[in-house]
Image (cartoon, rainbow, N blue to C red):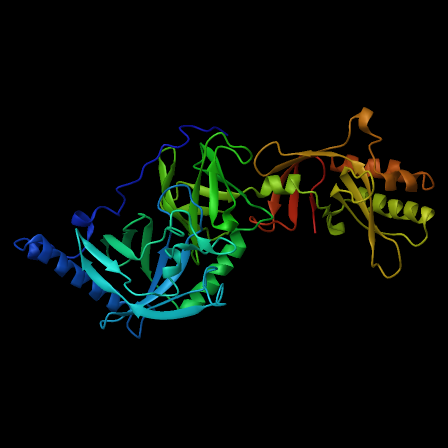
Length: 453
């Protein structure tokens, strides 16, 4: 995979152009008015839009809120919610981790006041304290323990004054007046608690600390992001020790996630990604850039044992399984072979390769393993290469295999024969493309097709 023009940034004039050209309300009617009067009328249009979406038969607004401007990201994005009333009251809600008074991560609502300021352009101002929002700009840094005044007195660098950039029927775009982060309002299509539940479900599906790495590719060039589950990703030319990198914040949606500002892969600009219908990847707005979890390297590199489903055994493998089980009982009559797989054995002097898992008592309450070294690698995306050891490495076995083999003298030979049936190249099809727990390994060169469980 090549990396070209790694960070060719294009901060789009995007559908988010400046106020004077982007707002959808008609400005011709204000053409003969003074600038200040025009802004007053524009504020009226904006307030009407905020209030109309907050009526009883609708669900108000999702506020995709970011802090700390467009520099390297420190905090994730936050889903807040709002209903605006024509009496200049606003109810905000959220369940973020910085809520105070014991409400952290709990759904909370708080009502306060807002106003429309006539500055160089329309400004939406949350002019009184609101527990949901104000914590982001409090001089006390809520991420510090114990909580103290931040060195610059700016806390998390949030904003309560939102400068209008553009709006239409589908979204309203603002920037923080002081720290310039993008803040986006979109109509909410369900109750706020339902939106939170759907967003959490999406996050749990596509983002995990167990598999934190992702390809970002346009089919020709490839970059990587890591740490999506934190809501703050590192975007770079490789996963470990990238030569060039940056950080981006994101906010999750019921359909995927959205970065705090547009970025690019060569000439393909992206900001929001949506999970595909087949749930294999996330696609950008123009569907030219895709994000794919590095599930293939996870399968190859993960040390857990991938146990082979006996139903996928060939006749030869089934016969060997029976013989290996019999050999184990020569060592200890209470041993019962549970499975054969590949991964890392758990005993002393552990090895990575073919792993025999067996019970040591009738209650099947404890499982031991014996390991025989095989190599695994990833020759191409979505492929696995399993190789039996070279002649000089054939005796690379763990202590359990050595100990048992001293009495069950046929065990190592039978295990070696089983390894030979797996020697080959495979296409991998996981049960989940974001955190595989099993997979189908289809032989494409040598080997034998098998499933894991």
